[in-house]
Length: 447
Ligand code: DSN
Image 1 (spheres, helix red, strand yellow):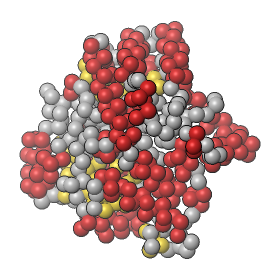
Image 2: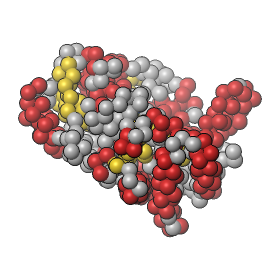
Image 3: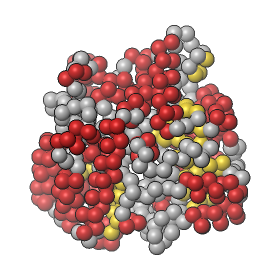
Image 4: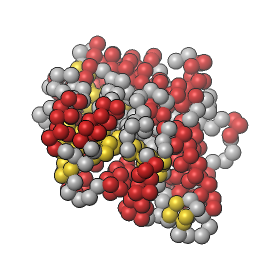
């Protein structure tokens, strides 16, 4: 990546997206706390130091992870954590909420602007609670919920039997076409016609392609179902206009805030105005108590960052990097599920090379590249073994890596997979990964 391009993508710093700029070099609450923590509780401080070093020295390529900015971390580690604020801005069950009202209102307004949403609730603690809040807003136990098969890329909270969603609702599923590995919308329409779900959930945690939300809306309308879109994975791409936005057509849209959106760990639900009162009651007092106002303040910071042109450039680079990586891996003989990617993630079919996803994950980790094993569509291996690995580019793009680095990363992945788990080979790669990582610091911190 040339210097001009880097400045566009990484506006806040000369080192990485999350380093402090000279004009913003005030002492940081989070860093001060981290220093104090080492005196107060060395055992916990040590674990945090080790995690910090790991994040810095390895290539984090878990598709659902990212490095939030120092500003986001600062809000996460702020005194907003001390405040109880059950209720909503202006209607709280506690006194002294005037300042958390300010940050919660900022988060709500910015979320609505970012996604062109009619209503936003920024209180869900995580993506699963965001989905739970949606279900409980309009469904009753035993109602039929239609979600994507987990091995085809869906998510546990979309109706898996081990999740509350699978236990509480009558679940029917749709999936991808065996040949194309793309969502089979015709089959989805047939299943909906037969099963008459009350809600259709679209969205996935391991689907590398755009989703046609308008088609899903038409299918939902044909059977009188609510349409709920879970955009936890591509939310940052949606915000940047690089992935279709379901907000204009879906009844509800849920997301997490820490994946491609690069914010704090947390959830967010948006909906049409007609569902606003039901949704808000469902989140609080329905399924949650006091909101995490420190994380809501951090969500406000994240949404503010995502509204910038720099974030749009960052999101475009995420996708360009994922496509570059997929191309290099395919050129090296590895099959990419669905033939490529439109997003931040790719699924590699390592099973074709008689490697399990479990082994691939372990070997890559030893080589300094952190990914997760993942089932691929119609996988014959169990979810604990799998035939695939899921690889994501949000984190390494946050470090400022671009097309030039993707060739090297692909080479290391191929070498690690072809090593058969040979310790010496993996150690050699880990050393090379560490050298590249040092050139792309995450934060401007001395380790
Ligand atoms: N854990 C998230 C992921 O990795 O996709 C989904 O909840």
